[in-house]
Amino acid sequence: MNDLSFAVPLWVWVAVSLVIAVMLAVDLIAHRDNHVIGFKEAAVWSGVWIAIGLAFGLVLLAWQGGEVSSTYYAGYLIEKALSIDNVFVFALVFSFFAVPDAYQHKVLFWGVIGALVFRLVFIFVGAELLQLFFWTAYLFGAFLIWTGYKMAVSKDEEVHPDRNIVVRLVKKIIPTDPSFHGGRFFTKINGRRVATLLFVSLVAIEATDLIFAVDSVAAILAITTNTFLVWTANAFAVLGLRSLYFCLAGLLRRFAYLHYGLAVLLAFAGVKLILSETPVGKLPIPLTLGVIAVTITVSIGWSLIATRDDHGDHGGATPGTGCADAADTGRAAGPCSAPAARSDGSKPPRP
Image 1: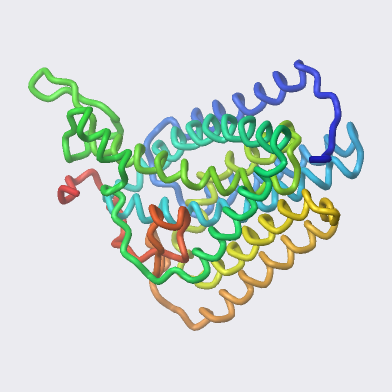
Image 2: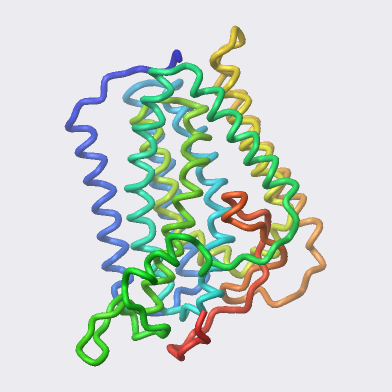
């Protein structure tokens, strides 16, 4: 599989990893106290993360030139678009487990760290498979097309995060108390160390992201198999996921048709990956960037126009209507209908 190839010294990998670690540390320090994150604060942080992600593309432009920079931006843009779909399911998980608003950022913070680790593994494994076995491009491509199709046609289904196989396994292995104990993941009851409901919600987030990581990494591998570009595009897109959630959680019902756009992007990535192993070869990066930008713009614009008369309550982490079964499709089919998460520390019903 022909692709961009340029030398990335070890010190560059280390430097980028340190930058990511420092940003995570800054975010942790800035939100070390458990508090409800409002739209203004989330918008500011979202702007910071997006600016950093875009600035890294300029660094690549100065270092390796326009083709490398454009490839990074294409990967970053498709990952950022797909991350919006993550927000739908995160909102549902928080609503299902009634996670207090003040603790949601903590769950997302550790969830993002897990997401970075999982994606790093998938990136190296997926890129190596594509380089060694040309036919894996057909498998990954078919998987992306199938995922896009499922996202587009899935009927509205009620999602039950507690039925996730990983969540059920954790509950069987680790003693769990079905309530919150402040912002703690573990606590002691009668001298016995047990996991809290906050930890169970974290496991649900991580288990969901495992499914998301498969098709999101496959989608960007359709653009490039250069592990440095795939990793940095993923990392900078995922780093802003927490702030993106708090920006969009109250507006999810307005994105009623976004899942159609995401379905198109997944299918396009699948076709692009398959074509890369045919006489057609890899599609030009400018074409890829154009398809991604137009698809996102049209689907969001369509959604906003169609829901312009929706004057319902957009506050809190309350998504809108309709959500495909994440266990079946791997992604939400649209905004999810669920009760709003509680802002206090009261004990929710046992899931």
